[in-house]
Image (cartoon, rainbow, N blue to C red; front, side, top):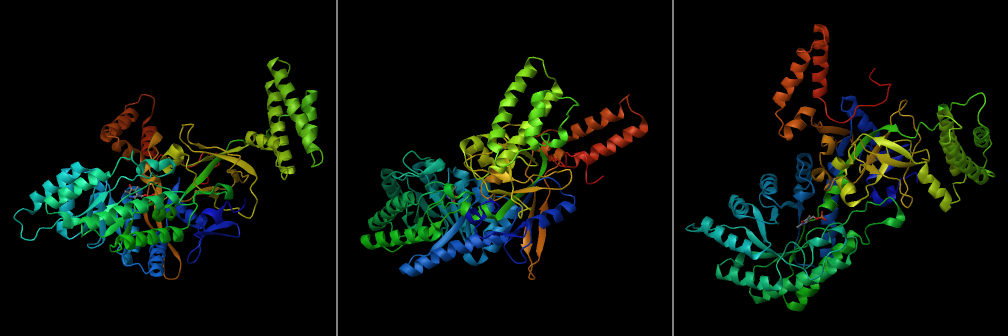
Length: 621
Ligand SMILES: *Cc1c(COP(=O)(O)O)cnc(C)c1O
């Protein structure tokens, strides 16, 4: 697997050239050259690289695919889209998103007051804003303020209580006003059909959100009675995220389409849009037998347009405008997490570690001979002999007949024999070999926190494509498991025989080796937690100038130690004074040494939690 499944998950965004993985855009720079340029500026630890051109690609693909389907079916309704902020609210992302989407009248979706403030400040007037989720009077009032500013805002009713508040707030804001202005109103419907997958709770009868048919009829009456029926213009549903199968979407579309048509025919004449929420899946798989999505964007768009057209025709209503709130699809590919490998943990099992004696116990001598005469023809037999000898030698140790050095020699030799046999017998994919492979996997200690940067791996076992930045001309042979630097055993991406990851055998005291995790742009950043107080990594935006050369912009360094503690509401002034006092007042230290220690301490406090290097040979010395 030299390409690490790039053709499955890569979507032509990256390309392998010679021995490196490169951005497949403009001058096609390698990720390792970008990484090294940033590290040379003094930023160590993990790096989050953002690529705005990949956001632009997703937005234009989404719009172009839907526009094509509209044309093909001669569909009269419009196509519009908003980005659901919960997927990524980080300013470097949102700024890039708004900049690259200027030609699409693209808007934002907000699910909380803070997100609504982002939407009200980042969306140009006229671009759509949708507001979902539970709302109180203050949040609804903010929507009215946005409408009065001139924003094109739609507030989605999730329950009848909310509608009552809207009616109340409307009176408060628009009573005695000559030209009353209020937000447009949408209703979220509670689908009969439910979503699938781990996020299924978003749809279906037991879902947290949405109105049942009985409640819909009641809402209709309430809007009519309060002169707000003219504001009701959108039907909304969301069946859940990372929808692997298209079938539930089709069911939901039929339900929503018929509700739209019935309400419209009943008298909700302003109704003009169906908002199909998110759910468009991203292919995260690195292995052909494990793909996550069974449809293309084209099929998705055609289904939406075709079904809405069919229902509208049958019920004699105008074709609704289509809104999507796809988030994962827009954001996932834009960021790459690059993390340095700090150490390989089975390096102690190399030949250099052997401490053979002048006279060794006979079984150890025999292991040594087996190792040296191992060939393809005898590999299976010698392997079995070695495993057998190991059992005997470990028993001898327990009984006190051989010493610790002998035991260490046993472990090293058997490990080397297993490794060599596996590479000799590579094409014989037997169960025994596979099981042995689990035993000799190399543990790569990587300078990042899975809790901070891949929380969905921790919480949902979501796979993220991972590969090294260079050496791609060499076949990697180490079955690898990845350890992060938290002291939590859940921060490990174990070797999985069904979805194996192989990495290169390297000596990190001699050369750098970086791993990149891809498709981390959706959900991971804000869901990331500061477990062990590892914070959001240093991030940079990579843009391309007219000549195709890349530029590193908007570098934001990971928080320093005192800022992290300040976030937890520690009084860092007191902490600072305590540290200083304990050095200055110490009886153990001379004047000069105190000054030196204070200097060092302040340097360390200005840095972030991630490790610089744990190798004895530090490149800086
Ligand atoms: C989360 C959410 C989305 C985004 O879903 P994706 O699967 O990321 O596209 C869209 N709409 C609503 C209402 C949501 O809650």
